[in-house]
Image 1 (cartoon, rainbow, N blue to C red):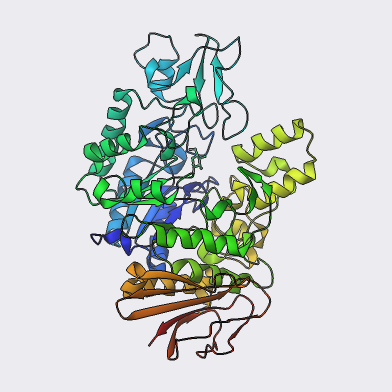
Image 2 (image 1 turned 180 degrees about the horizontal axis):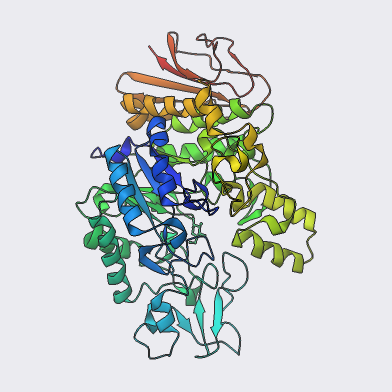
Length: 541
Ligand code: NOJ
């Protein structure tokens, strides 16, 4: 495997609407991001994944794009964007743009044209079908509830929308669509961006008539074409959002020899606390399942692919509330989860606020929620007879707004995010969970992340070392080694709040602690008892 700059990088994801508001309209913006670049530099990250900043009517907060080459008014102007790229470059921070090309907004000029008539030259940019027996063409569901087909009354045909009805799916079988997309990508590449995060890229090869959505037959052909037309020889970081990938599929995307993407962002571990396919049907996490899922991806790709490492993004609940402890052990458990993940092989992603140990939120009323996925699900489940309380439990646990409350910069009103009431309420714990407090405390979660990033930067073993899971069947401890040549790093984490004994009988006599979330962790593995959420990273000497 050829070594690449993004193998040893750490990515920080920004959801601009909630990051920092510079003009006090209650909505985060690009100038707000520029204000905080020094904060990110201090953290030590190399890359920003910027969730969409393009023109959008915001049905799905920017994931419904009406102009790929213009900036959303609330977020600023193209000049601001150019300045962000410049200011990032000055600090050695690259900007990876979100590429949302499975669908556009219904307010994109292509769709406005396409709707005009069956003969319009843009008609075939989207996926239209006649109804079947005066109903939808088939029973494909939208990921945001209801049918994936919407009738356009004027032309009496249905169009496909795998997300909201304001997000019509592009027809990738049409070569003109593909050419337009590559042209747009080249426009951004020429501006000097660091790469693309590709939104639900696994859906572009869909065959809706056969009800195949993910991993369609032409998916990889399209990505290879995209690579030839846009990405090749540009040394970019490209990461595909690939929900349903297996390691075999992961290799197809990210094996360097295949000329597709740099890495995959797959969700097997993220789906372990749900019943079946349905994220809203909750079940407790089993640690052994988590070990199996993460370890499988650590070893299965070998030299033929590359992982992303993440607990969080703008679609997922806050990890410290989900699998840590957001009460008494918030700081300890946040650091444990960080250590566990950042010791692994792959490119780590930190989602804004994760480095502060930000938590899930519980708003009193469904009216306080903004996310279209949660709101649609709420309506659908109420109609099906579910109880309000039961639905709210799902939203508290899994709703995407958990990740979208404003970043808590300090303890002033609105948490230093803005001087005006934010577009979505701030989590009321901003009084004590905030960046100002973290920066003033050398033992904070922030500095723990900073150290993890430094350790990665200074240790090739963390970047390229082989992964080996220890104590596979232990119900409390997640431990593994990373080995490169004669260097070994050992990571031992107590996943829970009860004390747990590390039953590892052999080897590792002479240990040095690289990082721990306790100030007095032991270097003696014999009879090692780990305290609540204790997480230690050792170098084996
Ligand atoms: C995945 C994105 O991460 C999510 O936020 C969005 O709603 C859907 N794709 C549709 O673009």
